[in-house]
Structure formats: C-alpha cells, structure tokens
Length: 494
Figure 1 (cartoon, rainbow, N blue to C red):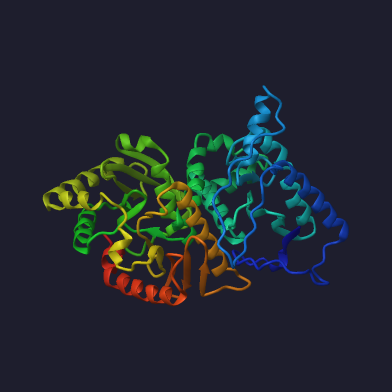
Figure 2 (cartoon, rainbow, N blue to C red):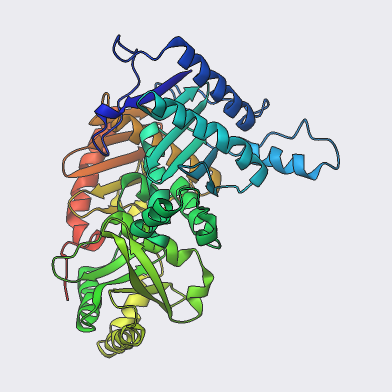
C-alpha cells in the first residue's frame, strides 16, 4: 500500500499529479503516522471489499478482459436479513463516489446506502484531517486492486473508491465533473456562503431531488468517451445544411440571450453565441446531462436556473429547454441572463421553427438526425473497427458507430475501458507518451497524441503494426477530407 500526499507548499492549483515516489529525507512521514494511515485505510478497505471479488491485474504487454466482473454472490448475509443483503449489493460495485463537506457531513453517495455512507464518511474525513495536520494534502491511496482518490474543492471533499483500470488522473477528472455538477445546481458563490455561515450545514437539504442528475453524469462518464477526452461529440452533417440551421438560430436573437444550442442524442448539432462569449466543453456536458436526466423536459417548454461553472461559477443563468422533435430527437437550449425572459426565449424558439420550415430546412434536418453516427465501412479501411478523434482547436470529437464485435453492452464497455487505459498511459504525468501501440487477443489499438489532435484507432487483432500505421494515415486523410461534415469549423455569433 502507498499513500500519495502533497505538501501545501507545493500546491499550485490544478497541477498534474506525479506518480508516487519513495519519500526523501525532507518528505518523510513519521512511522507512527504511516501506521495510523494504514490502520484507517484498512478499516475503509474492509468496509468496501468483498472477499469473493477478484482483483484485476493489468499487463500492458497483453490484452486483458477489462469489462465488469460478474457480481459475487452474498456469502455472509443471514436469510431474511434484508439490510445486510442491501449492504452486500452495495459493496459489489466497482466504483463508489462520495461527496462530503469539510465538516464530515455526507452530501452525496453514488449508490445511496445511508448505513454504508455513515460508516465510511468518518474514516475518509479522518484520513484527510490527519494528513492536513501534517501540512500535507492527501491525493490518493493505492492498496492491492483498490484506488482511493481524493479531490478537495473547498468547502467539499470528493472521494472515489474503485477497483477499475482508470488512472488516478482520470478518476480525479471525474470527481471534478461531480463538483462542477453540484456547482451548476447551487452556484459556487452560494456554496461558499452557506458553509461560511454554517460549517456543519447539511447540503442534502438543498440538493434533494437532484441526485438523479449526478447519477446520470457518473453513468455517462463510465461509457461515453467524450468525457474522457474532454470534448463534445459533434453530429455529422453536410456543411450547407448545418449552415442553414445555424442561420435560423442567428436570426432569432434577443438582448439577454448568450447561447443558442441545438443538440440531438447528446451530440452537438450547432451553437450560436454572443460575441466574445465562449462555452467550455465541461459546461456543454453539464447542459446535455441536465436535459437527458429528466423526461419532464420532453413534455413542453421548460425554464430552469443553471450555473455554468467554467463560464461563470458565481451566478445563475436561465435556460429555456424545448424539444423541437422527438423522433428524431432534437432539443433547443437557449441560455439567458434574465430570469424574467421566458416569454422572450419562447418567442425566439417560435421564430427558429418558422424559419426552419420556411427555408425548407426542417425536413432535411430531421432526415440528417436519424442516425447520430456514421458507419466505419464508409472510410474504406478493411481492418478498421472503430476510432476516437478529438480536434483540440475546436474541442469536438468524432467517432463512428460501434458495430460488431462491439454491438453488445459488455463489449462496448470493454472497448471504452481499453480506451481509458491507453488514455491514462498517454497522459501519465510522470512519463507521457505520444504514441502507443497495444496488441491484444481481441483488437490492436494505436493511440497518438499531438498538439493538434488526439486519436485512438481500433484495428482487427490480425493486423500488423505496419498496417496500423498505414491505416491511420488513410484515416487522417479521410478526416481532413470530411472535416466540414464532421465538425463545426466556424464559431458563429448572433
């Protein structure tokens, strides 16, 4: 077991976390301190482990089955003891996420077992507080197959306990998403004010009913590679049709409107912004997650406050949300600075629909939205199975549909987890890699990170490294040829 901590004197904001190394003379923690940490972690590990769950060992030279393990059957619960069975089920999950206040009050637990949360919250806060007393900030604990990752964003402490293949940095990024999700619901200013006034405030009172939004976010991050790459999926569409659709949004403007966004199946169709205002991919992910977390938005026009933590964490905007079509799915989001502007936004929506119909764009748009993915066979590379391509200049991502052999949930999940593993290798702060070639029993994957793009390409396991390099070259030529269909190349304003 090792504990990764960082001295307060070394903290410089959101720096990348180096891999733990042997402590030097100046960085040693007293033996008694390490024994206390080990004892506290043993309690936490005991509470979160199940003897029948086997650890997964990663050998980077070999392909591994990286899908979820079958849940182990409960062996210790007496018959009829429903509470124990609930706890046993709770322990089976591969990744737990907890949010606590700095006073140790529970705020959120992914699987919401109050009994389990109360028994672990104290141990986790004891670990955080103990190292703070030594003027260190705990970042992670690694023991056997488990990673315990801590992210502190005052006044909250976020903790993940997992036995997955994800790197510490990727888990930290997911915890930051959870923090931003909470800020999007209450604003950063209100969050700090509440805990300054009452350090022991129970934030669950304010967040009651919003748990499903955070649940949905965590579920999405497990299977959607756009979160992994910090990019937004762009819906493929011919440039002329996208431009015509964008023009309709540009013409329906109002003084208070900051952004007008069209989305379909978590893919960005187009976005229009006020001049000099830009929307971070994290804020777009949070907006998409908000829309897809509730079926009530499908029933009519909605008007809801929302904070955009990367754009402005201090206050609320107000979002007008309406579905222009259900089959195929098309949702319009308009973000306004005026909380009294519902009817103005509603009128803008009406004008957009009228223009789409008048210009003859509506029918073509609905037809283009029927499939959010293109088929990998369109590219004409026989051994190519799937890929992820992120354009760093635009923050947009493109990828084809996952087809056989990745047409089952298990295989899709396994491929995403393999992408996660290679992403962690490529972005390891101690030894980042620009290229990786992974050979496995089920597929070969080439990862390539440059200043302009990030690319992960999945090939048949029967191919060679030479054929993979040739395939990547052909793929990049195809992407450049199709870039006006795959991406939004301009940044339109009102």
